Picture 1 (cartoon, rainbow, N blue to C red):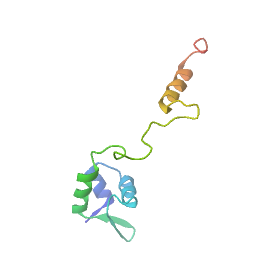
Picture 2: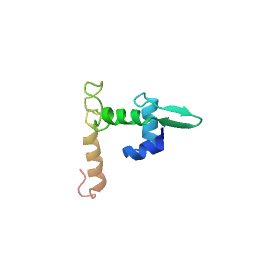
Picture 3: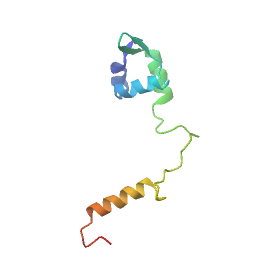
Picture 4: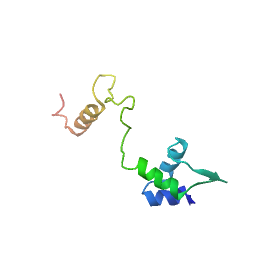
Amino acid sequence: MLTLAQAAAILGRSPDTLRRQVHNGRLRATLIGKTWVVTEEELERYRAESLGHLGRPAGAKDSAPRKTPSGHSKWSEVKRARHERDAGPADRT
């Protein structure tokens, strides 16, 4: 049995990340007192099924880029704000 802190060190993740995975049902763990523990077998199952798959699973809802109320993508809004921040008074239109 490994604590979530030990499991996190093995996986290169934070204990908080693994705690969220437990609460989301992606990692099976047992609460002993105030400490979550996970078996080595479960840790290997989690590593094989979950690690290396970044982002949302294929077919997840709301996978389209998010738009701001002005209809622009979030990224274009960030770029515009950075440009306005970095531009001098003569550059602004």
